[in-house]
Every structure is written in C-alpha cells, then in structure tokens.
Image (cartoon, rainbow, N blue to C red; front, top):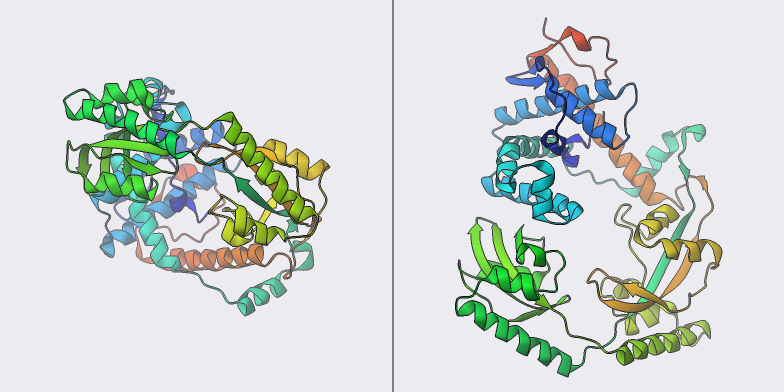
Length: 447
C-alpha cells in the first residue's frame, strides 16, 4: 500500500466525464463506512488515464480505500474534524489547478458540463473525508525526525544487493540579471492604471475593465477573477485582498509581476474572491541588452578567477530565492541541491542539452535568456558545481535519499502496527469478490 494515499488526495474528477454506467454495490464495510464498487472503478479509470495500471492495480486500490475507511472510522472515535474553511480552501486549490491546466473557467465548465459551484458541491463530502483521513494519518505517523545515527543504522541493515541505484545527479547554480525598470515606465503604468481604477470606482464593471486591459494571462479572460486562500498568492497581493471589505476597490500596489489594483467580491472565512487588473512597465530593448552586457562582465570576472561564483551570486543576482544559497537551485522534490537530468528537463529542456553535452564540472555557461516565475524576460548564467556518476546509494553522497527512505520505512511500520491493532477492534466485512486479492496488510475480517 502507498501510505501517501490520503496526503496525495486522489481527485476523482473523471466522474464528470461521460463514462459507462457502473453497476454499484457495497464491496466492504469498515466500521460504519461502506466501500462502494464505484469508488474502486473510478480510481481505476483515473490510473488508466495516467497509464499507471497493472494486474494488481484493482486489489491495491481496494486496499488503499480500506485503509482510508479505517482512518475515517477511527477519526470519528477520536473526534477529528475539519472546518468548512479547510474544505473550501482545498476545493479551491484543486479547482484552480485544473482550471490552469484547461486554460480558463469557461473551458473547465465546458469540459465537465457543469458549473464550478455545482462541481464543488458534488466533491465536498469526498474532500472533507479525505482531509479528515489525512489528519488521522498524521496523528498515527507523527512527525518523523531521524538522527544521522538512526539513518546510518537503517543503511547498515540494507543488504548490498538491495541498495537503491542512484542516477547521475547534478548540482547547478545560476546568476540572474533582470533589466532595471525605469522610473518613467513605472510612473506611466501607474498613471494609466489609475484611470482604469477610477472608472471602476465611478461605476464601470471591474470584470469588463479587467477583460479589456489586464495583462494577466491567467485571469484576464475571466474578468480578472481569482479565488484563493492564505498562502496561495504573493504576499503583497494577498495582504491587500484580505484587508478590503466587500465591494471595495484597492489603491494601486506593486508586486514582482507588475502593478495591480483589485476589487473584493466576497470573503468566506479564509477564502476570498477578487477581480484584479495587472499592468507591467514596458522595458526598452536597450535596457534588455544592457542587462545582458552586465552579466557578460560578471561572467568574465568569475571565469578569470577574480570572484567566486557564490560571491557573485550574492552580490549581483536578481533571484532572491537563490542568491543567499550561493546561487544553487534547490530541488523541491528531494529538498536538496541535487537534480537528476530528467528533473531539470521539466524546467528547461535546452538547459539539459547544455549540461549534458557542453559543460564540465566547474564550467560557467554563456549568458542565456531566462524567463522566471514572474514571466519577465531576464538573462542568466548557469554554473555546474558537481556531477555524480550512477552508483549504489551510500551515506556520503546520498544522505538525504537515505533519510527519506528511513523515514518512509518508519512511517510504514507505524501504519502496519496501527492497522493490525485497529482492525481487531473494528467491524470489517469484505465481499467475496475480493477474497482472491493478496493484501499487503493483515486485516482482521469480521466473520
């Protein structure tokens, strides 16, 4: 069983597509919680779309859902609940993700044949149960913190032929230079935005103004609309949104994306609905070329040994996320500075070609174009700090990977012990259709 079942939040949106009608029935009962055949088949359909299916997939899904039902059963005993605000927040995050994939709310609603508000209500109970189960699972596993000594003990228990093979990994850094924005360009944008803002204040439709003039590709077609909770937007944007009263129009404010003003449509607990207009100052081609020349000069200082790459990153880089880290990029999937080429390719396929075919350890790339998270044009140089060859995992090179493996095994043991204990005191009945499944855990079945 994948113990990340609940945290992964299987989003059952494939139900909204036209699918063959599933003849439903109860295939298991855990406590007071029935497990329906349709739940299994829906998950199976989703895995088929992702091409993650094999002959044991149906049984694995069945056991994953048994686990979730047992979590819900125990959560009820332990009085674990989630608030409406938590459910609304999770629903909005998921909808926003899929709207982003499809391009707009209109395309989302056309694809699934229903309004977003209807879609949310249909999913509300499922999402609430998943959040409750997640809290219960976190209570079982606790916060796993292992010492280096414990990680070494775990490593020493692994047979040599069971040590994982680690692919080639790279450590890379970059220095980013963004063209400076002239004060005149900022003033021009502010002046134009103020004209649009006053039109809204005087009664014109914020939705129409945003659709006509906003430069935000993610919301302009939807009249500048966003719905979000705390921690989802850049801090400046979020602070303004949560400070307004319903119907209020903000003053103009600046973020890394440009200049904005917004109108609060509604606030529901820790969720807000807003419309906003974004405009960015226009940068001349001369300023863009000047930034490239500056970075060329910085590169020459590094290559000639007059300054270390790490010092140059701290002093000159426009990337706030990496300049304090010697310019090194952090791999969020591994929480380390090491990247596999495939992971780098998800960010920039051209960079993979350069790293694989043109650069040796210690090299600094020529100046190349770069578009960061703020979608602004910039330049960067890339530094290849290290490259490992494929190898069997070892404590010196792969501590973070081994730490994650050891933590996973500890969590898995906690889950195994908990299922063994709780299944003995919980009513569990399984339909004979699944008797042939070779289940991973020792479920105690009620006669």
